[in-house]
Image (cartoon, rainbow, N blue to C red; front, top):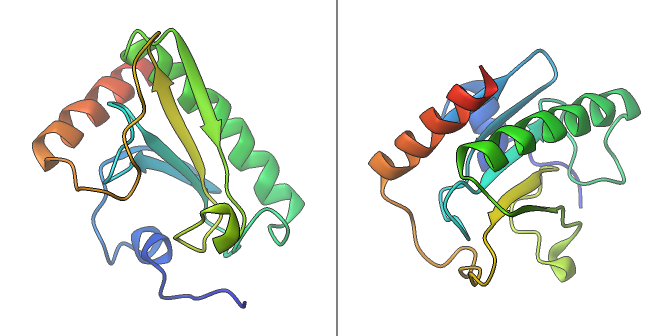
Length: 139
């Protein structure tokens, strides 16, 4: 499969689609997942066009994983999470549905079940409030 410049994340990067953004730098960005598996579910993506882990330029990956670490710490703090799950899927067989490299940051609470991903859209006002909490934790 070749990279699709019209995928939803490419459109977010270009500013053609809105997102509840929590972090942006020259190399990557982070925003709320529209269909979260838990409150605070955040995505981190490189700005470089990369379908998956196997075709991302090494420098873009370095910046993206550093941002993932930074945003994950803020998500953990903002949601008083007991733990944080980081997930990254490569290919449809692995469950990837948007073919632009992305890392899921999912705060976890002891005993709480994960919701089913891509089942239903979250309320925009809730996502906006969650984004504000994460931005505050980022400082």
